[in-house]
Image (cartoon, rainbow over the protein chains, first blue to last red):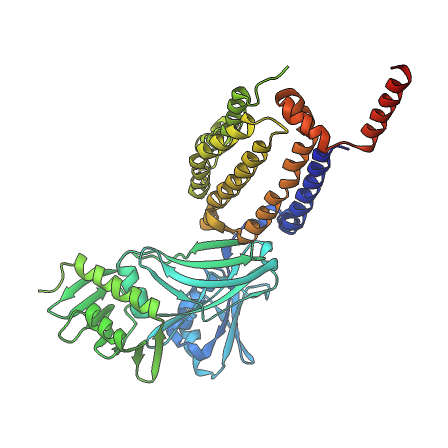
Length: 312
Length: 190
């Protein structure tokens, strides 16, 4: 055999071996994903951690869970009560006063109901728990990370816990300070959940799943020389606290007011950020923001203040 | 008969084939992806900017590759300069690959929608950079094999003086036996 032919044969064999070794696992995984398993959806079982809830919060979650269905029940502790659209508020108070630490909403057939996501609230933050159903390929992922973000705002909050369970379900837990959320909604940003998946270090997938949160109805104005006002919040939310060392906030009657104390709130938050991590606190409850998230909040408030005409 | 050592025709032919591979094919793929309806496809849910960027990079570097392949065709098989040209094209091909894959990071390569969710897929091909280096280096035995197989014919056709010295340095046992036989015949018959 001629030298060139020998060398070409050897080269072809090496190329075939390299292609098989490198791409066979991915090809195999892709072939094993059937057509309808490519869907991505957020669907969370209606199982509640009552230690993070009050009656109103439970009520709004139950409303979403039963979604007009009849014959549903709530199981808590050793008790069970029927649920209907009219009885939800009363049942919620009853559940919360029972001292139970967890509850579950079930349908007429006894199966646990599902809802898009479960929302918990405390004085300064909202906790969102959700199960994201992703394609089966996730069973072969090397790493996964989740953020909840607001499109165009630069705000991205990493999940406090995110883990893949039962093959293709990613369970995520986010804590989102109200100040961030309402500032982003006032800016008109759509909320999304970002899933970043590394597949065997070769492929990376970024999946942005939009939540159904509506940003309409939120608005931003400035007041006086040092106040930002965001309106359109749920009316039942009421609390007061601080953002860093130089800014305070109040939420009352559907309005959030940020007081920068003789400076624009964006400036006073930035000044506070220069001294260290930014904490949003109310009473004994506090949330610490990462530097990236804090900077995004400062930038967003600055944009909103500029759009609103700035301060006199 | 002594022919011309170089071939402008083959140089142009090689450059044209390279231009077709590095510019023409990516151009056709890009044109098809911009209007896939000719094949009855609907890619409106796909974000293909990453793919277009990659094809654009291939086309931009394609002119350099065509120039390099001109020299591969210009020098004939068996010419030492062809090995140099092939090595230059091999290095060019590797640089083209690095440029093509954006030095290993094809972030946001392709995007598509699933149930209203935006999915962006990126490819990290840093591992492929090493594999491609190895595969390119394995072409070197091919270049030398081609040179080895065609050297004698090349010298015979295009460099008779070189062929004489080639014969001296490549005098095999078989040649020696044939030569000794010829000398014996001459001695016997005069």
